[in-house]
Each structure stands twice: as C-alpha cells, then as structure tokens.
Length: 272
Image 1 (cartoon, rainbow, N blue to C red):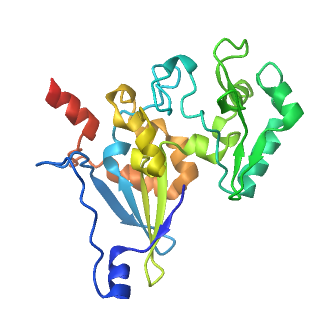
Image 2 (cartoon, rainbow, N blue to C red):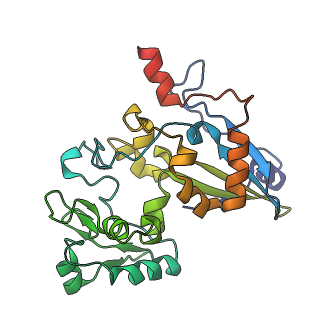
C-alpha cells in the first residue's frame, strides 16, 4: 500500500528534461476527478502531508452487505464478498504475526472455514515472495458466507466485535486500510511528501480495468451520516498518528472553508 517514487523535478534533474505525462482520454472542460488537497508540514520530522480533503469531507462509507457489488468482473452482490474475493496481501512479517496471534482466538461459531484451515492452513506463499490469506471456494478463507449461523462477513470483524475490541487490531492491514491509500515520495534532499487519499480504480494497476465496480467510483457508497475523517477516525489515527490526525481535522473544519464536492456526487447532481 506504500509506494516510494521520485518527484517530477527529481526526474528532470536526472534526465535534463521533464518526463511527458500520459494523456488522459475522455476529459473535456472541467476535470472529471477534481479533488481539493490540503497540505501541512509534520511538526516532528522532515515531511509534508498532502491530504485529499474532498474525500475526507465526503459521505463515503463501507456498504458491505448493503448493496456492495464486489470486486469481480461482474456484479455479485448476492455473494456478499465485498473486497474479500482475492484474499488479503500482507505488508510485512509483523502483519502476518498479528493475524496468527488472533487466529487462535477464533471459535468454530465465529469462523465458518476453521475446519478447512485446520487441514491446509490459512496462509499462501506465492512464487514472487508475497504472502496472502488462502482462498477457499473463490474468496478469503476468513470470509463467512451468507447463511452461516455465526454471521456473514469477516470472521475477525465478528470475533473482535463480540470481544469488545477494534476489528482493525485483528485484521490484516490492507483489510482495514481500504479505501485509504498512503503514498510516500522522497526527493533528492531526503524530504518526504506523504499523500493520504482515497484508493482509486487505477491503484489496482491493470487489474483495475477488469473491476465491474469499485466503491469510490459510485454514488451508492456515499451515503454515510458522518464525513470520512470522523467515520474512519480510528483507521486514520492508526495510519498517520494522532498528532497529524488532529492537524488534519483542524484544517478540514476551518469555518472559512468552502468544500469541493466529491466528483461522483457532482455527476449525480448534474444528471438530475
């Protein structure tokens, strides 16, 4: 979920010519993906934070089990898989260790696939070195299917909620980070610029072209009562830290601010 890329001016220094950006087809007049960004410097380290204010102020919420069409190449709301169809990719060994730590707390009543995990395990090591959760019958082994008595959805989420704990402390990192994307860009002087924004279809690479549906692309998921920075407060604090979160909220809530509406909401307004 974290990329380290050279900034444009660094590339220009190295090649004596700025790289030409690729043309985006199908745009006319006002850019279809207009977002407002806010920025501030970190008070403790050499870093500038760039925050997608448009997404943070938006009404996006996870609609798993409430109309989510999944991330396959055709709509599958009846499967109730959300973004769990392909299994979870781990970011590092600590991420793996945390999941292993919480797997032992899952009961048969909370985890539908526990018997299958006991036979063949719940992790898969890929040839490229990546580790993911194992897939069973077309989805993550930790996903309880519709009709399971213990409840459909992530077994970790169900168990953590029943224990009175935060689901994000039990799940693989990627599972609670989505749809927040964190990117780090370092220039030649060592200064880091970190972007905190929504995860877009393009972030899936070539696989994004095959997605029938993605939740930040549609008005269906912009139905929350609270803005994202409040709705995902715990996840954002875990991602950027409490100090940066508080600074972000301070800027987002300035009384003189005139928010830019999320592009998908603009499209819906124009159509009506």
